[in-house]
Image (cartoon, rainbow, N blue to C red; front, side):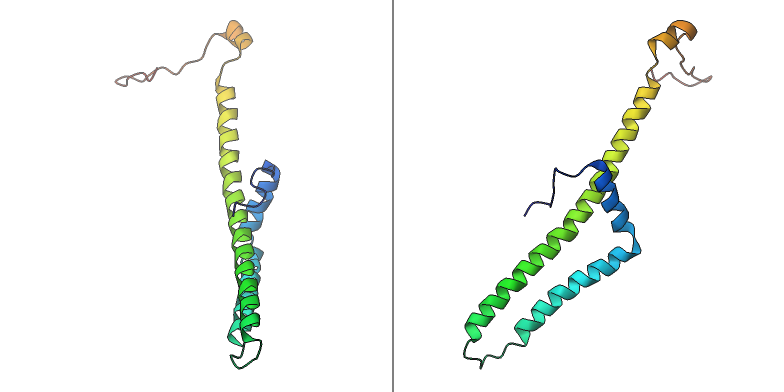
Length: 127
């Protein structure tokens, strides 16, 4: 299964998820999700093989368990993936902004000339 809202979230929404994933309450949220899975597992363990509808109930509960596991896992993975994507996207945006700032404005260059760092004595120039 693909991450939820894979391409629909904005950077701002991804940053919200990133903040949520770093919040102490997120650990509690994951605990709740784990408990949902454990409860579904317990319903299978508690099923009596002597029940006349054992096979039907087992199949139904197993399906519920797999679905619960899949939904819980994709939810947590999606939150983590979007949180990481937000940090990467934010770093890329910062790098682009710095690059724009480093590019001299032609009008500025015409007035003041270009600014270049001269190498120190004994160092080689990187340009």
